[in-house]
Amino acid sequence: FGDYSLVEVRTFTGRTHQIRVHAAHLGCSIVGDKLYGLPNDGFISWLSEGDDYLRAQNFPLHRQLLHALEIRFPHPVTSEEIIIRADDKNLISELEQSL
Image 1 (cartoon, rainbow, N blue to C red):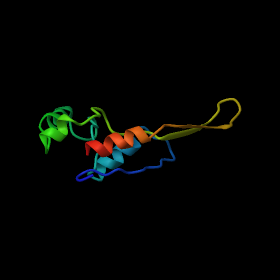
Image 2: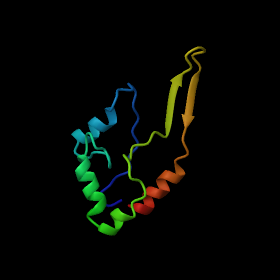
Image 3: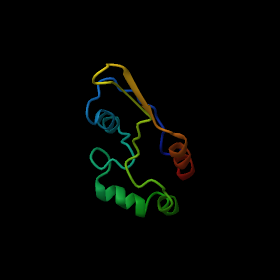
Image 4: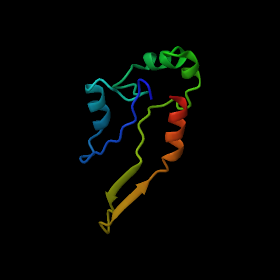
């Protein structure tokens, strides 16, 4: 992906912004993160100018690129584990084509 990386992160505590804060602290903030990454103007500037103007123009996802593929939580009444999994094939293929 050139200057970008596709990573899988597993969290255990459910802390708000946990992934975003740690990624930014490591110097590899999430694309489109206007709070911990580039400021809003920087992200908009990247979209309009970018390293490569055509790549930025054709970038299909104009949002923060943090996506939960799966979430798990206990059912509030039965305590049975509930698992919800997203279809990641479309998102990953869009990213591969744009980056």
